[in-house]
Length: 488
Image (cartoon, rainbow, N blue to C red; front, side, top):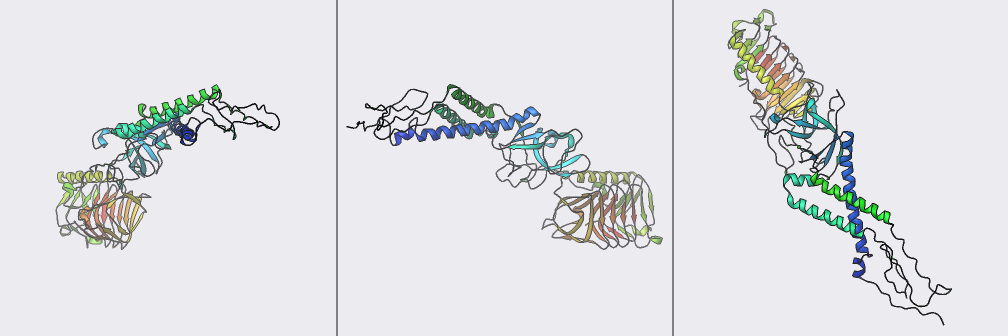
């Protein structure tokens, strides 16, 4: 007769098997825990190991660089090579002095360079901000250029620094649970199912199941063969895995205990990130001061180049300082006073210089191609090439805001022949400024509006009409049979 084997089998079935040490639930829990901790360890290594190479890690604290850079991300910045300027468009980490911060506390910022002023200073802006930062950054403030972004790894530091303790405690609890679950499942093997008609019971070995057959079977021909035991994990493997878990747990806790420097990607102007707080930084007021009644101001001389001095009229006063040359005009050509090299002229120039400096501190809203055409909204504009030329008809649209300000800054500013600047929807010539670090040249029969400030010479060609002012702060003015009328 054939051998009879016991049909009963000890062991767990159903949900008990799933939750047992060798069930699927235990296996998935251990795998998920180890996967999470390994990810934490990997991100921590990526975030902090480059510091050994001189890279500077910092945790982003606000959302002004969203969507690409979020709070809790770690940004690694590399120091600039000696003598090399920062690149336009690059995200840089820089130290902002206390005097430039609204609350008077120096901070490290992380913003993108959007404009090179050409004088060693740069305009920065957060990607999520509607406007650029109101204070220019100098090259010596740059700590480094952003090279590597490690997402999320600094979130616990942000939660701790901002007082978000519920989120921090939840994360700590989940991380501690993952460490415990991963440690408890280290060394557990896989369950080898016994064939039908066998009885399995625990074996010896490190976390494996060894199957033993009941009855008198010896493995002879025709009899069932006992299942081979699953290979056991060696002691060295268990030690290695526990070491990795220890490092991962330490890295997770280190994310709270060891806090890299914070990068306050601050909102210095209006921002589109609704969930973030912001504060508007004040900019110097734009005022002509004692220069307001003066339509023409020059450093060395003002000359009417039209033969016999005909055809030029000035509705306002004129001043020359420290020079005193005012030639080619008849007495009736100027409706106001004529101040030449005296105290009044010096005061006029001093306030004009103050206005020029205040315009230079205004943060650039955007850059434009050198040829200005079409409709332009209020803002502070710089040229992509260092020059601005008004061509055809340019409409300055205040969009119903009578206080709207237009500022155009470039090395040279010119208006083409017969070009026209039009003011629309509440725009006022008193709030339009043209700032040239070199020269201003208003073309023949051109219609200009606003205050034109030239650091060098200024020229108004024949047939021109200016509603505003023409001022040469360190040069001369030449005007030919044209009209200059103070803004209302």
